[in-house]
Length: 155
Image 1 (cartoon, rainbow, N blue to C red):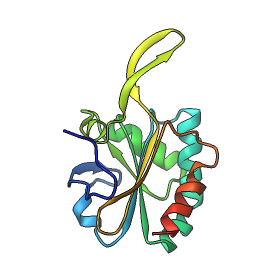
Image 2: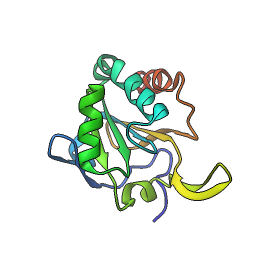
Image 3: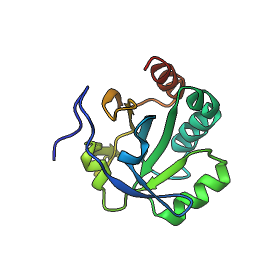
Image 4: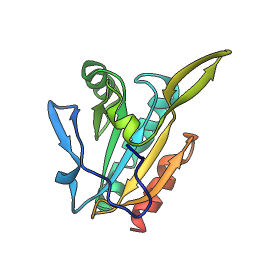
């Protein structure tokens, strides 16, 4: 399966989400969609990134944009993380890495000299027709949510 391509419709998917929901991409047509992939619930960078997106939720809403956070963590972990941080958007659980592979965000990483396969922090912005309009890979958290919001406003 190849990663979504710029200015092309992203193929439909369904994933378990917080709040005992299943999110289907096709059901979000008519709205812009931010899908951001992060490595792990309740870690410093991932917490900051989620807080930044949540703090800008009103701006994303005005820009007709839904935010979805994705990691390989369990639904129980996501529910706890979302509740503790007060996130105002859903988190999708991807334990089998289907979404991560669909968006090509699983890559070899190195930490303290140890190599492993992990999620590379990445964000994708889809327009109301489901077309991929922007992507950010190897994201640095500081200022990222603001940059994504500005891109969403321009759609």
